[in-house]
Image 1 (cartoon, rainbow, N blue to C red):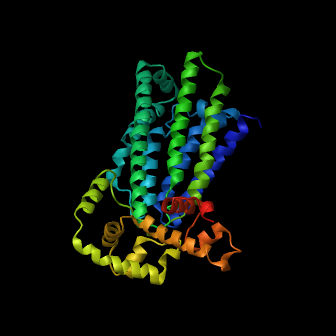
Image 2 (cartoon, one colour):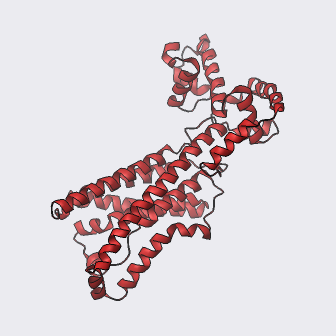
Image 3 (cartoon, one colour):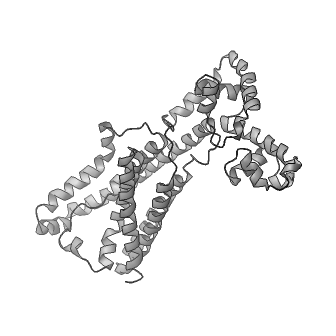
Length: 370
């Protein structure tokens, strides 16, 4: 064991363990998002596999399988994108028409497997050729292009999803998937870090083998974060965000500009329901739950709340909760309760959400109100 070997071995087997764990859960519960995240974990394991084996003194990958297409850089970013789509929409299905997203990876695999099956001598000849040199540059450009395109699309989808969540759920923290946004940023930071080492390697005429250990250690950190956060994410059977980024924003904007006047009639119905049944005390209250009680659909209810109260569903519910907190703070029977305890009793699901909502609707921090 050494400082170089141990962390990489831990990260490698940790990634494979969660790849199997997620794959098994995805198969058992018919959850595409888990299967795709399992693939992401497998890809991350392959990212550090060569150095994990190398620092362990196992050279079979270079001696017997040199040239075998065992890297998945060109499949990595589109898989993350499809994972996000599947995670925020349980009805999403991967279909044959989605395979074109893996065309660049298929080309990489076919070129390398054709060379590999012709034997070690052909692999050596190919790797020393000018064609291999230029294909290597094209591959690097394709990898970075794939990262830029799919991570940008993922962040767009995430941003539009966050806007949609505020119109559908009273507790946005649980379904926000902030960890995935952080994961994308970590991957970008990791690739920049890796590129910096490669530039330094060329500038300093081949750094020692051990120097590449540092960006592999960064990958181990990413593996731990993705495995733990991804596996522990809550799953929602009813979560079905199906809109397409950009187009959705335009569509929503058009809808809110042409609301019919009869939406005004919904105001007393909504107020009566919330005041009599105090639905806001339910931490996981959703727009769908309220729509069922009012015997309408979510589109009509969302538009009615927006037109009559000038708020999205999330703000509408949280304002009721803030007012309830203020009332409970004045109740001497609650003197033994902490501020957070009262907030949780009033429907808030976390301290951070309560603090933001209280500041937004009162202009004061919660402690200033006490």
